[in-house]
Length: 156
Image 1: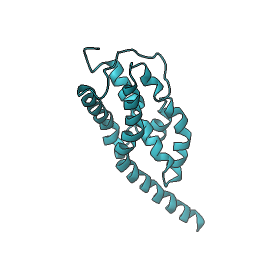
Image 2: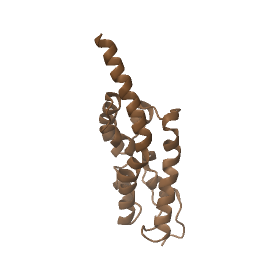
Image 3: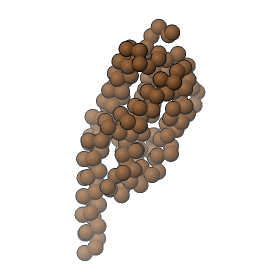
């Protein structure tokens, strides 16, 4: 068994793609056309760990409405993963790394145990959307109101 819990493999698997996949999933169900279209464009690349379309398309960089989740979601995921590993529910990572991006779940297979794959799937598909939801909901509602106002103005 590897002696340390935290290492580069741990960080890379747990914070894979910056937890932006959850945001992309939420965008697929957005009310605003802007974010719904961005979600459709970004979903396939996001499953391969390529999250630049959503990071720069939203944009997440210098977006104060999404600054808190963008900064703290990875930390929350790391703490949860650390505690689950510490109590033995998740195996320790062997430290192997991939040289290229693999799809969700496959990237975690190099960790050496099925519990690591399950951890990555739960973090990316369940925890990440939950962490993004309150902030994205506010952003989506604002964009939806802007779109409605713009449509009403154009129609007059």
